[in-house]
Amino acid sequence: MFIEPVIGNNHPKEKKGHIEVICGSMFSGKTEELIRRLNRALIAKQKVEIFKPAIDTRYHDSNVVSHNENEIRSTPVQFADDIMLLAGDCDVIGIDEVQFFDKQIVQVANSLAKSGKRVILAGLDMDFEGKPFEPMPQLLATAEYVTKVHAICMKCGDLASYSFRLSDAKQKVVLGEKDSYEARCRKCFYEDKK
Ligand SMILES: Nc1ncnc2c1ncn2[C@@H]1O[C@H](COP(=O)(O)OP(=O)(O)O)[C@@H](O)[C@H]1O
Ligand SMILES: Cc1cn([C@H]2C[C@H](O)[C@@H](COP(=O)(O)O)O2)c(=O)[nH]c1=O
Ligand SMILES: [Zn+2]
Image (cartoon, rainbow, N blue to C red):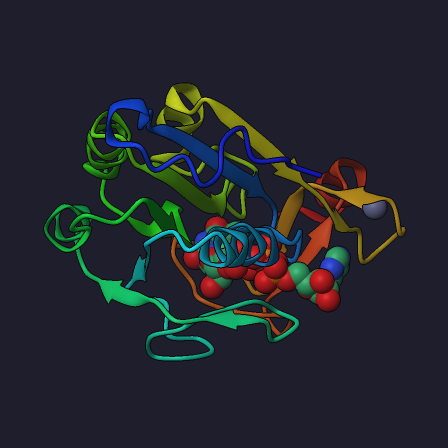
């Protein structure tokens, strides 16, 4: 389990920002882990702001919601730069579904961390083709802390790190749930990939 490197260190002179990335396939527990970290920051009475891309309204218009229905309030935003404007003087910033932001998110996350904020990002590291999901590679490279979580393969029960798309759709962004994606291990993903 991830243990926070610093929590509740609010003295302005000692405020050192950093970036944490939680990555993995669909159903791997990224959102649950993000919510867990943000709730602990709230318990420590830190000022927390949470964002998600406006396109992701699968479960709720504004809240970040996990597949097992944990949720936390958030602000949907269209562009990465909106986060810069809305972050204010908070201590901790959480962002879910970070793979859906424009590439400016890399600059935004790094600027916020530089200004002393703890930035926690959760997102898919690979798309339905098993290719890196931009801009995740740049975020993973510039983060201080990276946590890769795993789902359970729906074919063989092993650990899964791929998101298998059940439909024939070829565009990169297709929102969906269990009706359209399955978590798969490497072997089971490539066995059935078209
Ligand atoms: N194949 C699977 N492997 C693991 N968890 C699954 C799977 N399918 C559904 N789940 C549920 O999904 C939850 C994780 O949801 P969530 O945190 O929203 O994942 P993510 O954000 O990575 O898609 C698990 O706790 C479990 O209840
Ligand atoms: C692999 C893949 C996924 N998506 C979409 C499907 C879901 O709406 C989200 C991922 O949600 P989760 O919280 O990680 O389960 O992304 C997509 O648009 N393109 C893809 O290649
Ligand atoms: Zn498998």
